[in-house]
Image 1 (cartoon, rainbow, N blue to C red):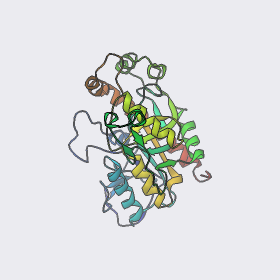
Image 2 (image 1 turned 45 degrees about the vertical axis):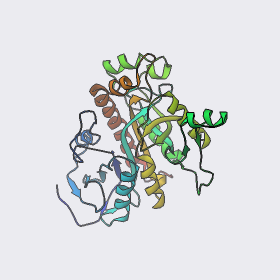
Image 3 (image 1 turned 180 degrees about the vertical axis):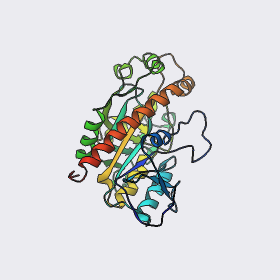
Image 4 (image 1 turned 90 degrees about the vertical axis):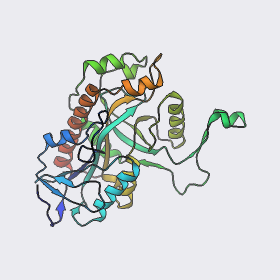
Length: 311
């Protein structure tokens, strides 16, 4: 690979959160970038000061780089690319491609969701219910800030989301025996269903939370922002969207996430068992393959019709 000093134009920039190039991968942390190397020939690379890692790109305008984990890392990487002089991103589509959790009454293992809203979980008031002095405080241990310069939610471009959904639903998703066995232990119909491609809100958080009670709080927050029902939970989208919004590129952003875990245990399962038993290697492998299959179909559609697409 070569590091060029000429400005590079990109049609699409793929944004997984982490890869083996970032750090020594833990055994329970999948490489979100690896499979894309087998899909496209990223012949070149260019370093960007402030970004998490070099941007790898093809001869025909497809780029990829890992943002790093969490909102701050994602915002820093995307800002560095947009503010830098190495890449011309004036017409680039930005697509997050990675893994996520999902509530079992909305999604299932192996499914892929295209986000239509991004909600920030972290910016709010929260207290522990038992510390509440009134019945209302004990029943509702969350509150939006009384002063908010703006709502901490992004509504992504509806037309672009529709284009992505149509492209994603045109492909066949992989399933796996272990995934079927695990999800069938849940009572919810959505959890027991086959993997599919759908649209839903993504809830972004630097905190990895788990359990039905926090899930209820999460949906309360999404309801307060009138953002529908959350379908995925992840750790980067709000940072990426904030950077893109400030550079006037939010209307060219898609979030494509595959479900590798449920956000709560099934009946009779302990919290710790749920955290460690749900996302097995087979689930990671099949879901990441589905993300690449769906993501590449979206890339192909955008590159075919992107010039005439009115976002």
